[in-house]
Image (tube, rainbow, N blue to C red; front, side, top):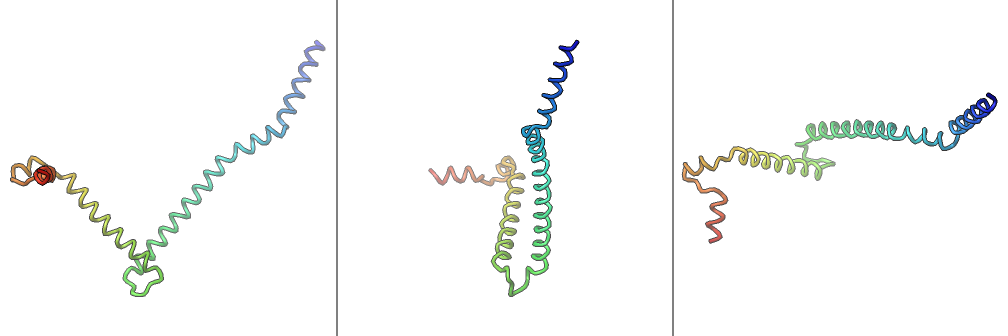
Length: 119
């Protein structure tokens, strides 16, 4: 039985030294990093959302001001919104495209027009 007790003590000492080793503590410390990084990312997202809301509120309040500190950015937003509206209208037009209805109405499709133009 002494042999088993000695082996048991050695295993206990070894496990305790592994548990208390720098490598184990380092692994535990590094294991916390993904969770902390995720929290940082979430908080940064909250900040960016707040910045966006502040900027949007500022834009809506000052979009018609004649003298403006952010004139270039306001123009960029106005142009982008106009282009977005144009693109959305184009998307809706394409979604509603019905070649059979155009054929019945005698309207030539863009493809047919292009083909006739190339000839």
